[in-house]
Image (spheres, rainbow, N blue to C red):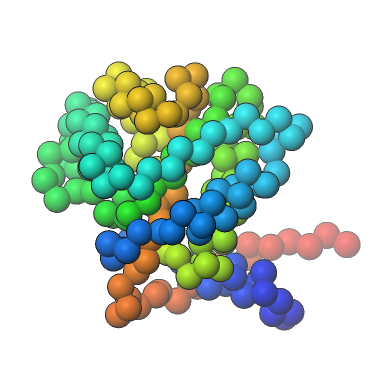
Length: 189
């Protein structure tokens, strides 16, 4: 198989769930965001928005709001997370990018997924760990969560489709090998 640089980057990307306190530099953050806004979007409308948070107090407040929404849930698993003092939905990453889009565009989730994948691959190329975070997507319509994320700059008419946690993993972190299932590809000639 051809091992060009892009494929090597794809093959080495892993979800990181343990981070040091080292902050992602402004230059690297800008590069990752540039990769995001250059992803494909339906009709090239670019209706998405990226809200990058590097303030640890704001991140802790966001986590509290998400936990509050979970605590109100009818789902026992989410209630447990909402009432767990040590639960942190973004794994204490020093940077979190909220990816939102206008939900009236039927392709909004796909556009966001493309942009997030670009961010994950760019982060990997820069030696920065990343992880897809879903919790805000499931809680963004909670009244308290919505008020808070709107105050952070997420457009009021947007739905959150995911978040990107960014940071550096500790030096002793072991990355899991990825196993690909059989039968995932069909080629029709």
